[in-house]
Length: 394
Image 1 (cartoon, rainbow, N blue to C red):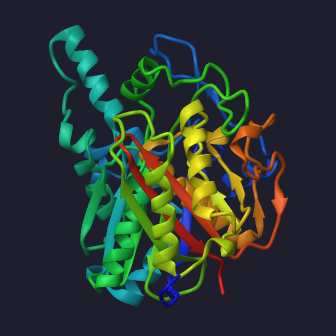
Image 2 (cartoon, rainbow, N blue to C red):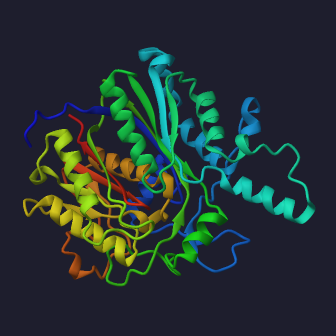
Image 3 (cartoon, rainbow, N blue to C red):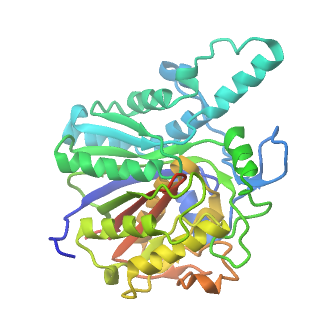
C-alpha cells in the first residue's frame, strides 16, 4: 500500500455490558447462541417497539461519587469492575499521568435530564439535588471515569453521534503516535432515553420488530444501550489496533450518500494507515443498522474498498443488541476483538433471507475461522465515517 506496515498497539483487556449480558462472558455466550436479546421499549414511551435494554440490576455508585449516579454511569461502573486488575497493572507499568481516557457517548445520561424535565413540568420544581452537569452530561461521565480508574492523563468524551466511540479509538491511536501517553482507556457508553427513541421514530427509522441488517426484509433499527471499554497500550499482549481511517462526506444530515464515497474512503485510509491491502482483510464488522438506505450504501462502499481483490465475511451485530448510538463503535470493536481472539465470527442476526442485490458474503450461521485482519465500521449522521483495522494476536 505504499508504506511500511504499522506495528500497531495491543488491546490488552476489555469489558462489555449490553442486552446480551452483564459480563463479557455472558455477552460472548449470547453471540455464540446467535439469538437476539431484545425487549419492549421503556415505560412511558408513547408507541410500541422493541429495543436492546440492559435488564441486569446494577449497583449504585459508591459514596465517593454517588452525586453522579445515573443509569449510564452505573453501566460504566459495572463494566470497569471487570477491568480492575488490568487498571491496577497499567498504573504500575506506566504511571497515572501517562494513561489517558478517550471515550464516546451520544446521549450520556440524558434520561436523567428527561426525568428532571418531566418532574418540573408536573410540579414546577426539579428533583432535590439534581445537577445537570453531574447527572446528565459528558462532564459527569468523565468525572466518574477518572474517579474509578485514577488515570490522570488527558481525558475527553467524543460526541459525534453513532461514530463517537469509534472516533475515540482513532484519537487514542494518535495520542500514542504522538507520545502524549503510553496507554489509553477507550470505549463508550449510552443509555436508553426518550429523545433518541422518539427522535428515530419521527425519522421513520425504528423497526416494529427485530432489526434485520442486510436482509431483503430489513425495515429499520432497534435502539440499544450499554457500555464497552478497552485498554490500549504501547506494549503488551492481545489483538492490535493496526490503523484507523476517518472521513466526512456531509452528504445529508440524516441520509447516507447512496454511493458510500466517504465510507469507502474511511476503509481505504484505515488500510493505508496499517500498510494492509484489501486482499488481507478476512472480516468486516459492518455498521449495518438494518435500514434500507444505510445497508445499501455500506454494501456499495465495502465492494468498492475491497476493489474485487477480496470477499471478506461481513457481519452486523446490531440484530442482537440494537443500535447503541455513541457506544456502537466500541461494541463493534470489542466484538471484533473477541472474533480475533477466539477464531470465530458470529452469525449476522436476522439476515435471512439476505438481500441478493448487496453482493456481500454475509453468514446466517456462526463461522469458525482463523482470522488475521478485520475492519470495523461506524457511520454517523452528517456523513461522519470511521473505520478501525485490527489484527490478530501474534
